[in-house]
Image (cartoon, rainbow, N blue to C red; front, side):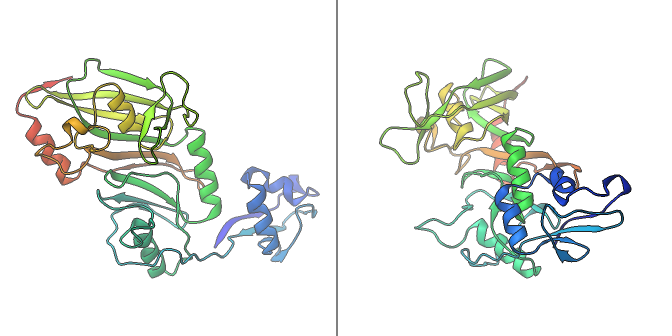
Length: 310
């Protein structure tokens, strides 16, 4: 597959290949892989980055062939929000594990994507750009090749990918808008559970910022519907931050033990509903939206007996 193609202009005559390709911002590792595979070409022939170019020459950069078989393809239905030859955005259902584990090797999103791409005749390596917890539903972005993954990962680190979530939390949140800016790290003697580091003494803690906006308060249900925007992406960040301010996500058995067993929901009430980003290759501005799944719609109806709109 083609990464990039360009006809050299008169203004670029005499430059080196690396001068023209500099805007691609290839990592050293990817550039090395492309060169070793002969996939950086001038007029159809492999070249060096220091080769000189002339007007009307054609520079092409081809994808490095890669097929990964770590995840056996499985015919698991995918709800696709966006797809082209560079990336895939899926609407993950709650309960679906993203990566296989030592205990669960099958029935994962990785295997579902493997089946989807193999059935289309596309080379495959599972490259999720970010992550979702098993029992969180919603939008997840997957790059189809190294260049797309590098660019999207860089955009994520620079906070240029906008991620919004919807959640139903315990209690009536007092403020309409709230920013939680507290580092998150691994709890002592734990491998899964995270905690906020309010004292600065937790070695594993990393900066974490979460923005929360109240959408609706349910007085009879003693709950609040919120929109959450991630500025960083720590493991369990939304769940940990909301729990730390006394408003655990409904149905969260890890961070909201006292309200984990509610009759309306069998999993944490958290949904990744919007992804906004610049396409890594075409530079098109893309917005993907996923409406609340049926179980969270039913939860909302049951909470909404007496409503105070914010």
